[in-house]
Length: 122
Image 1: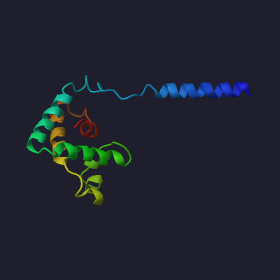
Image 2: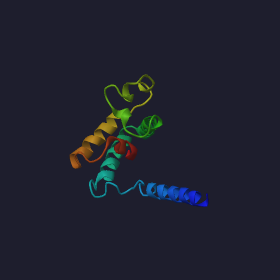
Image 3: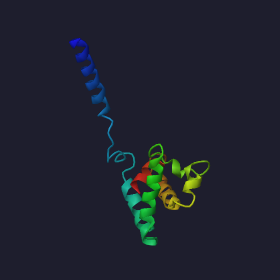
Image 4: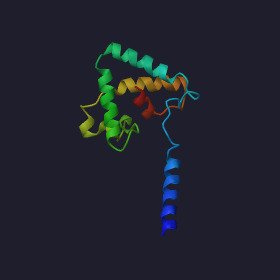
């Protein structure tokens, strides 16, 4: 009986220790797209200078993306996604800012940074 309990404890510890290595990293794009943060910051500075409320709107957009099934960028999908869903039609805005940032990031680092990460950084 004690051996079974010990085996279960060791199994639980090994499972938990493996999961601890898959952590988020603030330097994830440091080598693949080193200018990512400065590109996003420059675009956000320009967007906020054009319209002061856009920062709050993008925070709301990020919330709506993360609220349902996680932060996957699904709210940015044009056809058949959350972007055109009834509750989101007149409540979220800032898609054009994210599109501009994505265009700028793609010019510097094509195919590297996901839309979900751009939305999180913005």
